[in-house]
Amino acid sequence: MAKQLVTQLARLGDIVQTKRLMLSLKNEGELCMLVDKNLVDFARMLYPYAEIFGVDIHNTNASEIFENNLQSFKKLKEQEFDHVYALNHSSFSQRINTLFPEEALRGYGRNASHEKHSKWIQLAFRWMKDRRYTPLNLMDFWGYFAPNPVASQLVNPIAKPQGKGLGIVLAGQNAKRSLCAQDYAKIIHAVYERLQTENNSFSGSLFFFGTNNEKKFSQELMNHLPRKFHSQVINLTGKTNLNELMQHLEGLDLLLTPDTGIAHLAAHLGVPVEGFYLSSANCFETGPYGIGHSVWQASTTCSPCTEFQICPHAESNNKDSMSSLPCHQAFQQPALLMRLNINKYTEERLQKQPLMDIIHYTSSFEEYADNASTPSSCIDKNAFGLTWQGKQIESHQRIRSEQRSLLQAYCTAIKPIPMNINPVQNTALFHETDWIFPQNYPNE
Image (cartoon, rainbow, N blue to C red; front, side, top):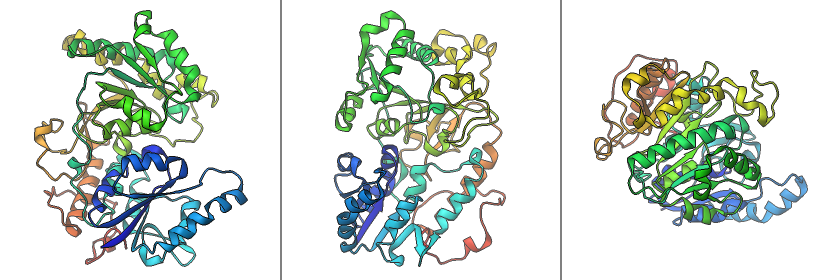
């Protein structure tokens, strides 16, 4: 049996989104994972069947980081892994790759002192040139590094309300991707009323989740919420470690959140996620994985942008100026609040208030089925991966569907996975040499 290592040195959410790959590899042999040393315990909770190694990533002192990692690097090299799945493109990750033989590397590899990307990585670079057409979720992208990917429907449980209350993730890592307190409070109010109408077992509790950095924001949010909600709020901002966070997430009826690691953790636990994706966040890339989730996606002409670029529409790069951005203004319209509490309004009333620059998507595993968002339509199918269904027809849908079908045909041709193929016209995604078989996709 092979000895395998997955290197995932990115954030908490990325560790969760490696789940399909980890599940696919665990039956192929001995499985290990390398993560940021601060996330070792979290990774052990998530993947109890794998041995977890940690390295010091975020230390700014170059000599200290070398000294701290020297023993870790020595131990990794001594493991003599047969396969190393290198999932990160950072310079630090590339240095770690030098610990292993070139022939063992999968993904971001190397040839002598030069980087050597696998075909699968090269394909991703091509489709990422225009993120509006992203055809594949990150969980599935990493999952298809495995020789025998586990069925996508088996990765996370079907998400269902569980009676504990409504969770609120206060903010994402980047201010551009997080709602301001005033807008968020109105959204929470509308969703809260909807849950009360739809679910007789809804407890009415509101859980705030965030780090110490969001303590001020949590107070601002409280100030904008109706006073009748204040006694219902359980403010856990800055009060939980990752183990406690998982315990509080379990059993929620719904989690409201930007694109965050907590959203992916909730999906892992079978908690329904309702996401608000602004600026650089794109549900087709990093939407919560599984059936039972929804995303309100900004669809302005400039979305999705690059995460850390300064927005040309912003007066400054301060958090206080974010509410003036086009993608934020889209979430300020009354038409959104009406749809968040849709039970209060007739279809005729909604038609008089069209929703602009936002598309509401629901998660699905079968893009060609009319009832794709229902569990019965996908539970017995070996779907290609997660996709998103919107009631509105959006301008990028055709190209995205074509690229997705081509990727599906490619994966079906070279992996032992039974999937229906939908023939489409050729696109610029593939080069002719990509179709030369046999090849050890996606590792060569």
